[in-house]
Length: 345
Image (tube, rainbow, N blue to C red; front, side):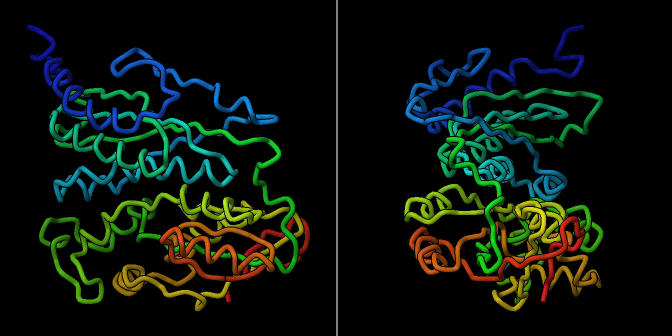
């Protein structure tokens, strides 16, 4: 009897590490001090000494049941982008710059090429975010998970000068709300999607004219990473007053999170184009419109609040960064303590 007979293949683990090495190295920033393969990652804070009062911000998340699509489609090189996006997009809501990222993969069996494909996506996401991938863990869990399946989660750390923290506290009536287009469903609401569509290779490989691609291609499209888009806004001199990452809970849960007490948000649903994937989900599943807006990003992966006078400059900066963005609403007063801080028109 040995460890491999018990279900844990140490040699496969070594091969996984070897295959992912170049992907990890491609993300490294000058601040990374220890080489690949150590017991911990080390990141120098020397570069942030110029900040008056540096504050660390962090985020952790996973990909959720979107992974079921990766299993069925046998496509594993994009879910890593999702994992990074879900963490770093939360960090930038407070104005933070992502510094480094760590991943955790739990699998029923270690297939080195599959693990390397996952980490390839993680590394690509880190490069999109400007964050270093400084560590991670791959854990083989025989008898706890099916051999072909895995779970993926991550953890990110960023930094912001305290004076530049974005809290939403200074949002005022008349400020405009700008929405930045999503790349699709992102990584939320897949438990509902799996009840609407058959999760089979045949169903996911079905081509839809309204989508211009197969259902699987539309659904597995990775979550957009907004780090560089928001940096383009701040670099243009615009002060962002509030930011909301539209994840689980959709508009109704996430938009109020960027608002101070006594302030509400009015959004116009027809102020931007609704992507066809959401129309397909709603019509096929006979889902009520409010449920859709309470579950999905509905085409806006991130929304932000700026002064009305800076709306044009904000849109120009986002266009220059290659993003599609729209003025979708405005800030308005509401009763302090009101649970109805969002009005969709």
